Structure formats: structure tokens, C-alpha cells
Length: 300
Image (cartoon, rainbow, N blue to C red; front, side, top):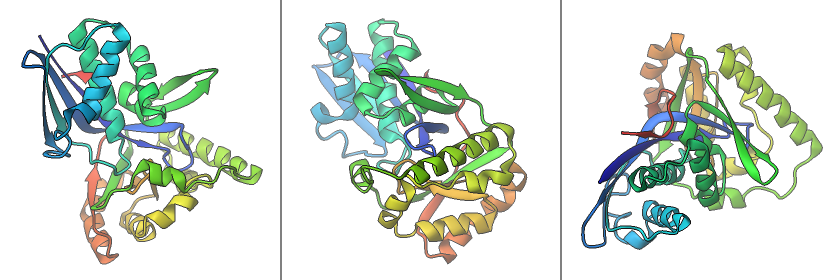
């Protein structure tokens, strides 16, 4: 028996929607499981090749699969685990969430457990610890994850087709733990009110396609001011995106990727202008123009 599943990358927060908003992106991590072998065989291609397969017992996909089978009260069968990672590691594009979700869904398929996406979402949040990237990886589209009692709930929305997005990915990584450590334990009421208004503006812009207020909607007072010092070229990358035609820029997830939205009417122009604008600003980033993934995790 075998199962192959892919889950999308994601950009979380989207500026003001801290730990709440997520957007699924058409870039994928794939996990393939096949019963058989001497016990456990692991191979990794793409991001992390030659590194993530050195200690199979500590690999995130393998530990996720082990937790899934333990939850069923069953021993993990002998498996060949093949990972193909296209989501950059530790760059703020939800690589860990994509891996966890793909591994859970593959184990669900192989085991015949038949869990729903809602159940897989809950399991993935328990492992990942945060719901924003996980929600986007499971359900696709634009997601709003919110706590209801002891669990998280999700509303899935479809952003307007007229909106394009670009991720400006640096050569260097930034750990989520380091980015979290930079945040204060408390914020002012003024900052909280500021973010409520900006989040409302942003969601309205993404749903309607009217980006006239999206620049203001991407502003944030809860996390970006504290994380920007960790991303030395944030200002230059953001300015390069705006000069190329984007409406505003923001830290993707915990960073260090900087992302931006633009109107697809100027897509050809921004694709042509952005690489040169980044180079002129001295920002060594590659620009990934990514469509929104509408499906979330799927059996491949």
C-alpha cells in the first residue's frame, strides 16, 4: 500500500493579522508513504536534501507519522518515507506546517483511519503549536483561524482573483523561536485598536480586490516593529516592491521573507521590474510570484 499527499506553503499574519490570518500558496511539500522495507527508510529531495534525512528518527514528517499512529493505538508499520520539499526552510513560508499536514494526511490515507480535514487540522495544530499556517495548509485559500474555547476554528475565504502576490525570499534563514523571542509580552490598547482596524481593512481589500486601502491595511503594531531589526534589508526590499508596483509589503510569517500584494493588471510590469529593483537596493532576494492555492492538502 502507498499514499502520496501534498500540502501548500503559506504566508501567515499578512501584516496585522497576527497568529490569525493565513494565505495558502501554490508551492508544495509532498510526502509519499509506502509500506514495506526493513523498518524505516527516509529520503528527501529538494529543500533540506542531504540534511533532513540524516536523522530519520528526528525528522518532522517521521515524528508526525509516529504521533498519528500512536493516537490510533497502533504501531507504525515498516515504511518507506519519501519527501519532496519545495517550500524554503525557515523563511516564513510555512514549511513546517506543510510538512506536518502532508505527513498527517498521508498517514491518514495509508492507515485507512478516514479522518476529516477538520480532525487533521486539530492534530496539526497540536503538533505545530500555531493555527495560522496550519489552517492555510489544510484548507487552502485565505483563512482566519481563531480560538473558540479550548480549540481553534477556521473560516476559509477566497481572495479576489485580481490580486497577485510575491514572496521575496532571502538567502539566510530566521528561526521562528528567535522571531518569537523578539516580541513583547504586552502591548498597549492603542496598538491593539490599531491592528483591529488594519486587519479589517486588509480583509476587505483581499475579498473585494480593491487595493486602494491595502497599503494601510498591511500596517501592523503587534509584531513587525519588533521583528524588523532581525531582517536587516526589510526596508530596502519593501521599498523595491513598492517601486516595482506593489501596494505594500509585510513580513511573511515570522520572516525573513518579505511579501507584497499587487493588482494583476500590472503583473507583467512588476515581474519585469522587481528583480532589478531588489538588486539596485542591494537586497539579495529571489522573487517568487505565487498563485493562491485553493485546495489545501490533497492526495496527489
